[in-house]
Length: 162
Image (cartoon, rainbow, N blue to C red; front, top):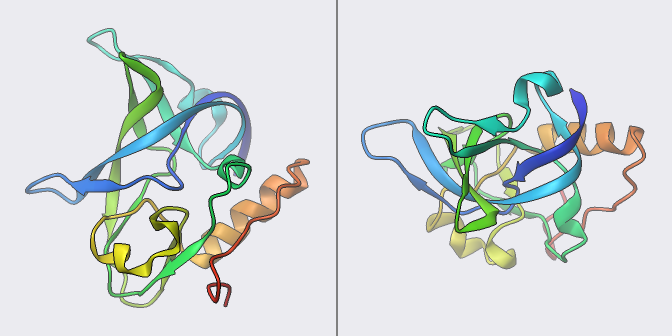
């Protein structure tokens, strides 16, 4: 894990839509400035421009959305979800606070997963391929960020924390 500073996309509550005939989804993510965690060296996931001149960022993990009141919700292990860490994103030129990220669809029959999307309504686990993580990955990322001075305490949907 790498502790990065700069502009990044935060997809922890992003609804995602599958891309037809692929194992990927398009996710609508928030663009933020500040501290985040990447799974790749920071210089390899730095903001830039694509071949068309569009501004690009990468999806990273942070605890920023807990400051906005988002809470962690669990979904069943048999539901598909999207993995967005270190994925490329194109910043919306009309709304630089949003980015479209291409994330991998995960179908894992062994692990439940969690997201900050869905407003604690587990029926939404069936209506979006939420950007998500396993509890193990979430706990590891949270512990890593805390070791770098990020003191934000995650909030959980009622009855969600195992």
